[in-house]
Image (tube, rainbow, N blue to C red; front, side):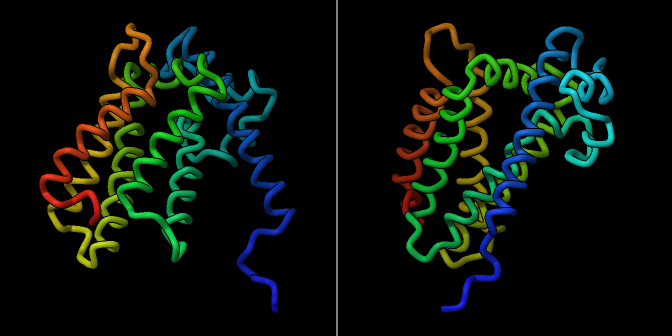
Length: 208
């Protein structure tokens, strides 16, 4: 059997891990500085210096300053699409639900303080709002396409777009909820998806 030319090599994987490590270190520096002086008042040079990188390295990894706080979302989106491309993939709603909840849970368990600070910046920094909404729109469009493909219809279908928009809205609601009752972000997201499933099931949409 011939090797799959499209499969990542060990060198590719090492490069990807190194790139993600660099991105996270810059993100951690950006969050720490933003907590002190606000994200809008923090420069790329300050972020790079705090993480022991150059500004040129920063711009090799990110096109815009705002991208640093969203460093891992593209990779997570790509992973969901890879799962969807498999012939034996689970139903789309189950996949989307699992991916969103697993992502939030991974944030919380790997570094709770970093996750909370980052989410607060998403919610409170006006300079990050356009980039935050852009990221949400990208996930929403991707979910709509996945649901539509499984249903064999166009992604501009109302119900496909409704499922996608409500899924992303659930994430915003979980992120925007005060956490004074001890509930985790993942816990809120599970509750939100449980609620959505009731409505989707009534419309026959949970298994598109």
